[in-house]
Length: 291
Image 1 (cartoon, rainbow, N blue to C red):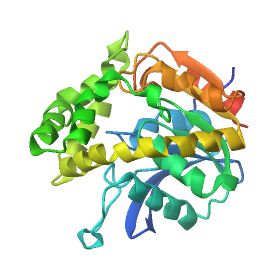
Image 2: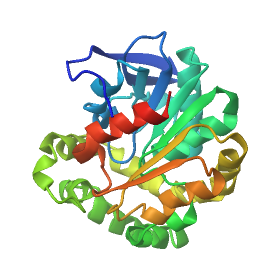
Image 3: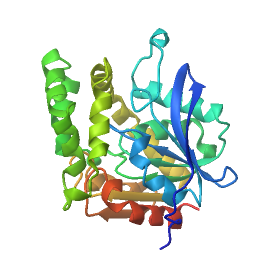
């Protein structure tokens, strides 16, 4: 399997106004090549694609935004932004329109899955391919690590909210998400979880994340629509999954084949942040499947 040259790719770092938000994004590759959107998850940002972008940019025009509440995207206080997955999906839709993107494949990870799939439901004719790396769309894909969050959904009390904050929204909890299930944790660059943690510490950001945890329950209500989309459109699809992920477990990866039997499903011997340990392999598989 081949990947792009490992020579340093020219990656630009930009902002664009969309939906009243100053969206930060990374861009690389020839704009005449097929566009691929890279959509990050919690608690990261487009920074998580720092190693993947150079490997893909000879093959695709890469666009990787920071979703509202993450990374370097800026939201004016006067915008009174409501942090929900519907809002993130709306902002992403206006972002791609602001860039004039009318055709693209998507790489979705974690939170990027329900956000990107909302975009696919809105404009199914635009989406040419899908890579889901631990990006869930099936109830059976939710692992035991969701237990405290499910308790928060059932009883959104301040006590249950604080349980999530204490367990997840700190350096220890963030590092755990990166290293859990990884045989060689020395492969995980410390700037990854350290940067995520520092950005979580910005004033008001923890409340944003807790609001999104609560709203995540609404994504489950859309799973039947996401699955109907997979059945109807059957676009080229690569499901590539860290099988030791405690949040999104292997049955969620395997379920994609039920609705799109042509989907390529591969489980990797790693955890949630599979790009940290298997970036070259994942890049090669993307290039093979998404043309």
